[in-house]
Length: 355
Image 1 (tube, one colour):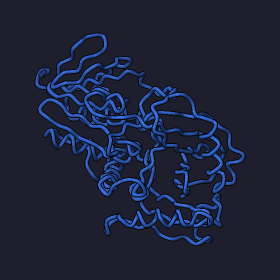
Image 2 (cartoon, one colour):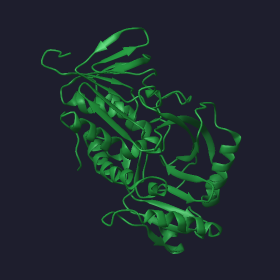
Image 3 (cartoon, one colour):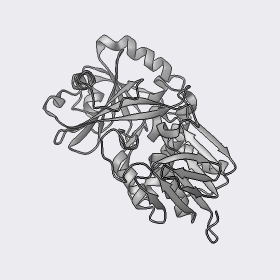
């Protein structure tokens, strides 16, 4: 309910969507409260927000391999929004945008051509894949296997997922954060927590991801991510290996840290990374990045990505209630655009806009 002259907002879920909403609305003067079953900081135990278990890739063109043009267009819009958001946070280096690479071994050129054919669905005004010669690849990324077929995807990038999640929270001191507070129900104008308390608001947002059942037919899709330590590894851009059986990417997190992922398993099992997944991911990654042989494993992370039956994102808004869900494997790619659309649908002001 109205708190003085402030409109009250309740947010169920403090993942990426919840933190973006809280940050944006608190900056605009709303009285915001956020409820989440976990602690504020990541625990990397498979139970925290899926936003922490992500490489933060911003690759709308590459995602056309297995997603719709709608998802790609939301992704291109999010790229501009992320640039504005990170500038507003005072940390523009949270986002890197130097393009990404697609690589394929010569034995997999057929699989690569099928993927590239799907990428041709991109609208004409968006960047197109650029073929790289062995010499051009060696100049861009000398640490990679130069005999592979390679393509540059201009303007794609990646986020520092963990640092961005924490920055959004820390720069929202006006918001009231209820940690270790599971939500049992989200309805028009109120959030009920598992301790039986009913919290009433002018508007509530349900952004609990895989926890959004039974209101939405959301399922969890298991994803696995490996963190590696390799001092001065030299990789500058995200790299995807085009393979007939695996979707493998390598993302530089810092000058010494790399992320390798990601399996995509139709299971809601939150147990540790399997030997099979670890071996397959690392073998594929090593085949295009030979120096990984000397990398050390920091940790292996697991989480569930929320997906709806059609694997497309959903915004459902009615008076007093908005549900956003179904980001699937595209959370970091889609979140800013979906938050923007949701706030516009609610006639709420935007704190961020495309740069």
